[in-house]
Length: 503
Image 1 (cartoon, rainbow, N blue to C red):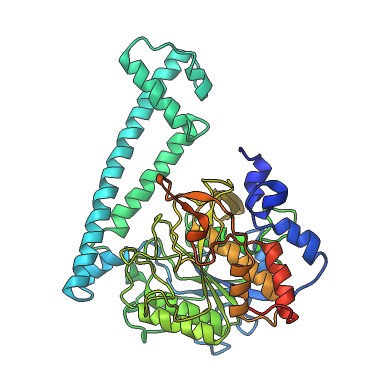
Image 2: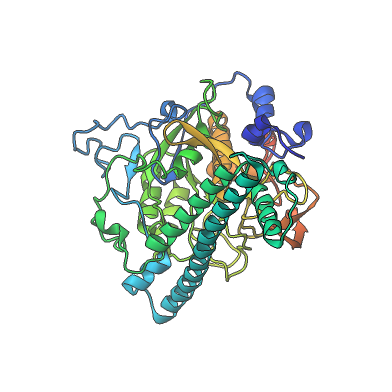
């Protein structure tokens, strides 16, 4: 079933029963349950890249530290961070970074076995990216030549896939060109869009080669600290704004959670009565364990009740710093919402490590109860319900939420579609904020259990990782076996808050 333009932009608001689209039933929750009720304010920390703090749809929902005096270079509130008005920037002026396994090789971190694992991962990725880059370059050349040929044949500079059927191939080369262009135009509306998509792909691969995978690159030099010394503090600055327009991830995530719902602009976020605390700790490359651990503690100490963590990596040399921070968050009743990752992997398989997590100490058992891990759904109810990129796991993924082709805020007052478990996690963060706003007496553990238990468990088989040979019951892909539902969650929250239901 094709979605209308309006449905594409708002599908996560819709209801499976009413709209046949597997959204959050968010519109129904606001119309039938929340109505005109005013909840308590809730702060959600977006632990992520830099954020556009001046975006038209976010500027009114930013968390502000009123104990700090902006721009005076003094830590007025004595929280250890200078000029932290809307959050904190643990990356300073740095942006590009290596993957963690590249850093392990550059710095000789860990024992020989650990370095060999890092080397194998690096070599595998380097080979794949190098080959992919060469294929893309070849595709650009062939697309340019094919485009010129079709323009000559049709006698016009712009054309669509249907126009190609007007050309009768009289040789093998023409057949190849037509087949190639018809295939390519299935991914985009026109040739110019395709060229832009391919150019973006090449740019991403170049970034991988020039920064992420380059062994002798040091992205941390600009920051000036030792990122492998948790006691080396006082680095970064109080401005968590994105450095460049391409640093868009946190802006997109924040919009999903809390874009202003009543300003007639852009989009409506999941939650109202929310303030967004921006914590810049995820660069273009792998995040450092130190920044994540300190970022979690900053969020907790400055009043966040929910932390959205739309990031992850396969190597974590100082994972214990993050584990300790998660325990600290749990002790302060803070919910940690984590993206499951985008490798199409079974996270229950020990060969697919993903950090951070809540299960490293004892296999199958969580060492904290405040972490909820989220896989991604598409808007198509049926075999294609689970996004092809989404990780899964009956022990190590808790729930699924909308995450594919999500329309949200982008830097400089723009809006775009993006997909990933990075988009699914803020759906859960927004829902958690809604619950904590209207039922502030409920703990983080209550909220996690409500979201997991109130979801919908569809009795259908789905394709996993886009593999038609790998079709499994949806209920086997996560601990709850469910997709989140705001309408059901608020009904259950009401019953739990009144003591009518125990969880």
